[in-house]
Amino acid sequence: MKRSEMLARAQGRREAWDFIIIGGGATGVGVALDAAARGHRTLLLEQHDFGKGTSSRSTKLVHGGVRYLEQGNISLVMEALKERGLLRQNAPHLVSELPFIVPSYAWWEGPFYGIGLKVYQALSGKYGFGPSQLLSKEETLQRLPNIKPQGLRGGVIYFDGQFDDARLLINLVSTAAEQGATLVNYAQVTALTKDPEGLVNGVTARDLETGAEFSAAAPVVINATGPFTDAVRHLAEPSARAMITPSQGAHLVLDKSFLSGTTAIMVPHTRDGRVMFAIPWHGHTLIGTTDTPIEQPSLEPVPLAEEIEFMLDTAGLYLEKKPTRADILSLFAGIRPLVKSGGRKNTAALSRDHTLHIDRSGLFSITGGKWTTYRNMAEDCVNQAAILARVPERPCVTRELNIHGHHADAGRFGPLAVYGADAPFIQELIRADPALGEPLDPALPYCGAEVIWAVRAEMARSVEDVLARRTRALFLNARAAAAMAPRVAGLMARELGRDGLWETAQTQQFRDLARNYQVA
Ligand SMILES: Cc1cc2nc3c(=O)[nH]c(=O)nc-3n(C[C@H](O)[C@H](O)[C@H](O)COP(=O)(O)OP(=O)(O)OC[C@H]3O[C@@H](n4cnc5c(N)ncnc54)[C@H](O)[C@@H]3O)c2cc1C
Image (cartoon, rainbow, N blue to C red; front, side, top):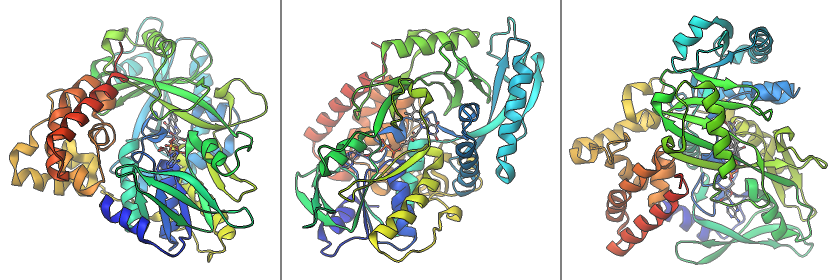
């Protein structure tokens, strides 16, 4: 995947595309993959890097959502559980089964959650993961050696999926490209073009690296911009009624010692009625999340002080070692693109179902949903968009399509496991130049060869792309990531033919950004 080639294809095409997709998160890339795999001519434009928005900032769960079961949204849970099974089948290098324990401190919690989780398991049918069961206090402590033992009565174990969101997204971009889609990052849609009848028939976009503008035409333009859905709808109809209620969710990352086993904790009811997880992820402990309504979406949301306190307090109720602000290695926030529902104030109660919406201008928006259900959302979207675009209706083929990197035994690649079938290429870079195998920082497992690979094969353009989304350094340990920045900038400059000024500017920009991921 080369950005220069993708951009040349986007700028050079004189005929119309079948579909233009705005937004390179899980939703947009999923739609691009589905459309291209059906043989449609597909262009996707992303204003920043692929996954810069919500899709790199999730809780990293491929799940049906126990909470939605409690809300009675059985169809969403069933759909998500099926997609969970398909995703593990199609991307086994990135999606794995993870045991969760709901600890019980009151007599009624064990039987109550035990029944609920049996139902959850039953809903997954043939796509099931391991069976749920009641655990004694001793069994719970064996699996969760760091849980607070005082008052513990036992727990309920169940199984769900875990993944690396940004890595999956990059692999989906590669898969879509292999299926013939053209996908360009750092290409912002600045305007929508219309035909004489006022119907959207294309876009004007800006290559943010050069400032050059270009236009592209298609009978259907698909708006998959997540929290920015309304901003893009307003390009077509400035007076269109907003359909998104943005809600922020924050996470914090601690050292592995806070949750040293391989089992996650699920707290079904925090003091304000939310769900909270403590999850082992990439050798660290991930705590999250919150649900805070916000006024305006931004590309770089920052966790609020009260969100940080809430997560530390809640984690402290369950973990033997109570975490403090000084223990936070990284913190990050994402914005849920929830679809408005009447006058509801509590965003936690808003539906996670996806919505397809066609404005009077013909602009087609897809929003809501979950990372877990991106494939199903894409199938639904392309089915409808094909009718609107009057292109041949062809069946969806993504249910059994391997995602780039697919490897049944990626664990054998050790720290390179997330690359799946690509790992041998990175190993080859290290064999040719062993210095590229040295860790970039002692706190994290990332090495120089991954930087080279990210630039050559994964369209990484900036130090942030490499440290935030091709590797997950920024999300795991912001200080270590900032320390790695000059070395990463140097390696990238060599690959991209950039000079020392670029290196210095990139290092500085990244260090400024990394401050948002550290507690003050
Ligand atoms: C805190 C949190 C935790 C979550 N945890 C989970 C989880 O564990 N499991 C799960 O299944 N789901 C989870 N979700 C939900 C999931 O992350 C989202 O549903 C999904 O990532 C939304 O993807 P998207 O593509 O719609 O939006 P985004 O990822 O935000 O992508 C939209 C993209 O559009 C681009 N864009 C905007 N305007 C333009 C323009 N003018 N031109 C070009 N591009 C533009 C943006 O730059 C952005 O990259 C979570 C969500 C949050 C907020």
